[in-house]
Image (cartoon, rainbow, N blue to C red):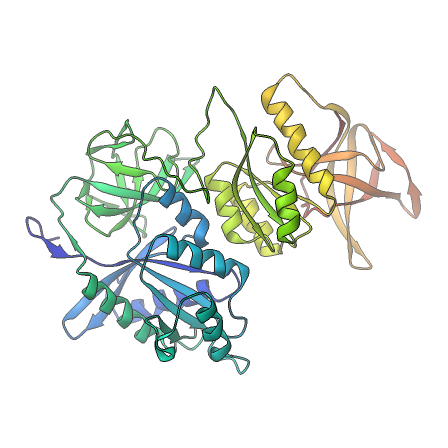
Length: 477
């Protein structure tokens, strides 16, 4: 690392796009392609950020990518004044075009006045329709260059690698125009890109250094809280001693898990308040507690009706129309919120992501069920003495399918469970989802209830993605 001079730094690029539009495939192709071109190293990938080396006429250059899913985490950074992104690569499928989630990304790009390059993915498919996508971009006031505008649209394929070199070239060209400079000796400023609690190492945070140099043994501050760097870890799990501008690194030394978007500085600082309503700092106000939720609905009218039915004790971290996506899961995670989904699909991929991130998804096709569930949780939050009356408990010991319907093989361990009971689906000793017992069978017989010590087959409505080992608690309020 060169010190005591002002140098051009690598551009920091946030990659956004709809969950099914090939973002992950494209990023994987970039990572693997760049590794193959370097004899050693080549990529510093860790969690949601990594660096790629690009060979140019002037020699090798680095690009720092942030692949935190979608706009939600990006909003979390912005809400705390963490403008870490230099350039956005907006991924749009050449076959599907602009989707609702793409529009959310475009909104964030415009709000932050950021340079954007459109990566038109899946261009290897015969069903591609680039003119359709470009027309949609014009409608969103992002006019492509070949339509007389200033937005570069690069056809790419994560499968074949087509267009990747052109995309990287354009990123570096934009960086040169922006004259991105950093001084490693300036006061530290870094931004938390992702954070988690490791069972063995404790609170960890993946950060990108904006300016200055982060060193082992240094003390820095998040707001007014001091933190001492115990270790810096790269993507290979190796300890390093320092990280300079635009470098992604994981930090060990926090006493609690920091919020995504938190800014690390050399001196104490107050939280920068934002007027943005898209997302807010989800810190808990002890004097005025609020239930944090992410809300998804099938249409805008229903979404507005749901919003209008909620009390001031509910804080909507994020909301939108359409299927639950990775952005919603990350928004719920970063905002310490539960996700309520009304009449929208939740894919298996999203369910797995929610499980991994320990995000609770509560689904319903009946609007008042969503409202009642939220209100009940608000009451519990305001009066923790309110308890459920437990009617029965059981454990899912098997899974069956009859006519494509998933049936939980349940062993009742306490009390009794009755058809129509409201139940908690428990996972890792936490409420994972709430649902209702739709039907019970013992052998070939349809029964109304089953008592402790007996086994049965059980179905639920709304649908829940149960697993063997999950617990079931039937209750009444």
